[in-house]
Image (cartoon, rainbow, N blue to C red; front, side, top):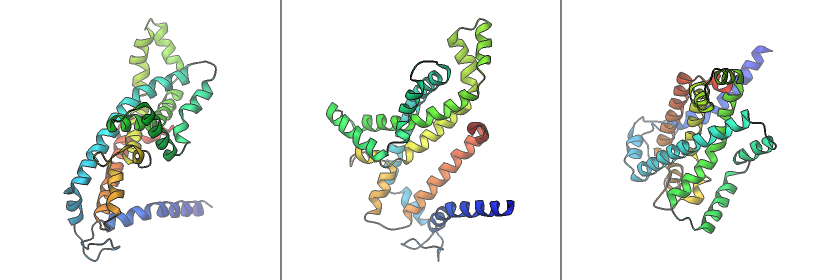
Length: 259
């Protein structure tokens, strides 16, 4: 039974990873169209992708957008998570459910709603639109991750600090914040990835002069079909793996998920 279980897990992992392997291998093709396996191997499409202004500029836009949205959402999520976990007030469960709504409602619906709301309010700045929207979609991931760390933190530790004369702010900064730092870091990394890879929300809020990398890739694929997109996808896979490794080294994935 154990062998059968391991076999099923292996088949499931192979099914999930097979498309990624195909894209990575195809990115090294020297031909003008993607092929698997490549008949000739080359790094030409990596060089081609890195020399395309549309990809470089949109990647810079995605990086600053993800960074700013994460930095703005983190303190808000920390305050909300602490209030929900440590607070005792009517409607706490309902508030928690409401704050996690962006995880349930389809992103395309959220994007259209934000577009209509901002148009009604007369907000025309593209950067402001994108930052506000991406704060909204990254916020639930941060709240959930930080809440997971706070739930595992024994309240008696904070109570002991207050009993010894530490004021609430000092207790939070010196005791609570260092102990939940792994959850905060993990949430920030997850939020950064979610913001960087977002398509459906950004689709409603960008214009031709301010584009994100996922939208630039979609636009490029409308008129081109070469391995440069596979090369970009491979670089994004490497970026995601690097973030996962950093997360494991810094805070530990088992600690984040509570295993």
